[in-house]
Image (cartoon, rainbow, N blue to C red; front, side, top):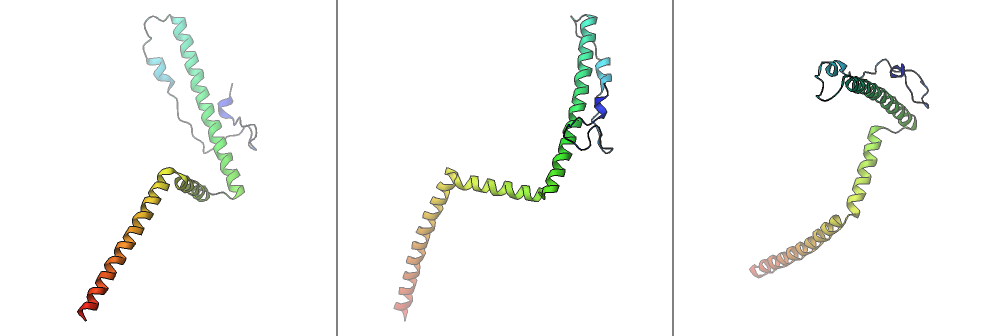
Length: 139
């Protein structure tokens, strides 16, 4: 089965093709061949496990290729829709800011700061009045 060299994305316009720039993370099957067998395994069990390992490693490679193809397709769709990374970041920040504003902690903090601001305003007004009085007395 030579599916490792094909794009299996059924919706892809490049069905069955891979990008030349795509690179795979190599799977070192030599490590499994050099590792000593676990005691208690028969030769047949060990061979069966090695075959299963090779199959799983091949599936991993195929899945990486499919994921890369899906990411490319996603990028193409976003580009065609005019969605840029900056636009996505802006939407995420906007959504996060909204979430912060509706959170209880934010509301309590906002309320506390508002009260502190009001008290500070009253205190500064009182100090200002006292200074004005003193200056008036000095004249």
